[in-house]
Length: 417
Image (cartoon, rainbow, N blue to C red):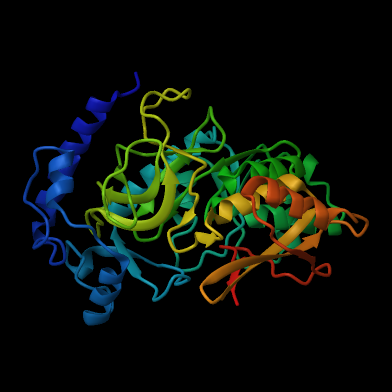
């Protein structure tokens, strides 16, 4: 029986007070958090936000791991590090207990993708120091699946390994799923006959962008794309709704989630677009309370979803970053919106967005790499689609085939010039 809102918040409160008691031994959080709270709103009122810059400064002042540690260093067994794409990387360590909690979170992601014991999951992932699919890989093995590592391989070798092992689930970024399809076409490998029935994507918003999701599913012969998002420092946060494509559910038995005005910090009503703030309830060894994620989201109306859960629903998944949104002639332009328009227009293999500012006037320019040489109407089609959707004239130019960068992990397509 799905939990209703008051049951969810009651369970969160129990877990929250257990966590707060645990954090009396945490030098970073003990001085800034109450010993206990009477409710979720009481917690929000009495607990300050945590900012990434504070964590970076703490680790610089007390290297290498800072003071956000609840237990002696000898208790920690796992090390991860953020990618550093937004600045100084953060080092994050976990105990066996906090790592197991994250595996529980990823098990929910796998279940949402209808993964069962005996399935074969191929992880097209470099397995570097960032969290990435590490927890997904171990959650799959714990569930009884065959987890196949795809690190240290070129794309064509990964395709052959995926086929040779009989994998039926692929785990990668949305961009890399598209790139693998491109490489398969060049190598004359028919990926529609590989037996991939689900593609679990993470690391970028593409899995919840309708145009990108539809293109991946088409190229991979109808394989269902299931989105997920998380962060190295916070953990695996959400799972793709099994009933409504384009919706992410926050695991509210694992997290307290808030959506705030990024400028004022004020809480927003359901249906508004704002910044996601998260408190993880079970990663007590190195927790984050009221963490300003920088992710922009739009919440759906509160209530039970068609999939049966009452977990908080994010329409369109992660819309972008607070520092990624660009205001062009009074129009808020999100990276996800541009990607949806491009993928829906069709005929684009890869793209890049250039952002320029002249006398406080921001302009965008699109560079696209066509999927075929004969698409003479591509520029006009994309410019018209941008104009219709955004009421903006955005110039589009063609890049020669194979000249724009390809990405295995997070794509960096928005460039300031």
